[in-house]
Image (cartoon, rainbow, N blue to C red; front, side, top):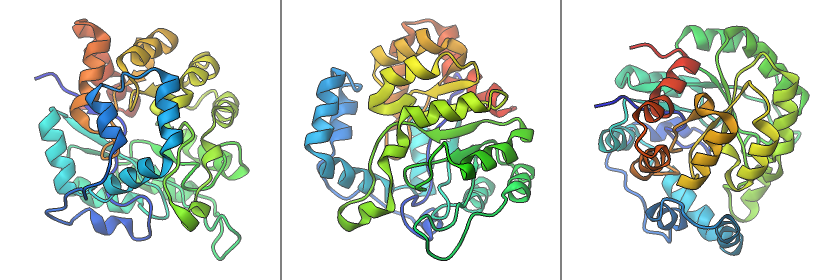
Length: 313
């Protein structure tokens, strides 16, 4: 079987404090909710972009409830079963401090070496409460020494602009390690009701991403989800930067082909965003986009991520 690296996935609860406690739970299943993402996956996300965007705008709470239900299934048991089901060789796991941190993922790696753990930065309280951002240089170096293969930034959940001084300090601190920085790219929401104050969806915008990648040309960046519904804008504004890769999560066969054309086959990475996305349809989308070109399949499903994250074996 050809090897596959899923370049974007999650373990644990990335939305609530002490999210690592979820990882070791057993027998967790998804609560029954209306799940628009599952319906879209059944069609390999093959909806006209305006129609797909409109459905998410008309039923935002339904989408968010389903996302939260999926988030609550992110156990190691379920992660491993999903990898087995889809034939995944290695799965990247991304933290979102302060809810889910590198130490949580490092413990999971010791139980399942197929996991590729990234590290993250705790920016402190973004609403003016106790806690503040501290120089992350020593912590990032320690995490890389402990096996971290990249840095994850989630501007929406962490409520930190990619153009902020704190984000730039984190990227500058991580740059000497010559490993990729993956940031969430695309406007989305994760909370309901009063909890919406805990997020900042606009920070997922492409303009913030463009400013960051432009100012750090020697750092390799991965634009998570290729911008989601802003994929056309991401292609237009980010493809001209040779230090930007994109992952395929939630994009259709047509969009993946467009991403390959825009960024080149060497800068497109397969990803599912498990548990927010299911792996079998994500794999099928890439295979269909490659139209039987086995060399292109191998590059997107495995080689690009292996080279970028220095995965050996």
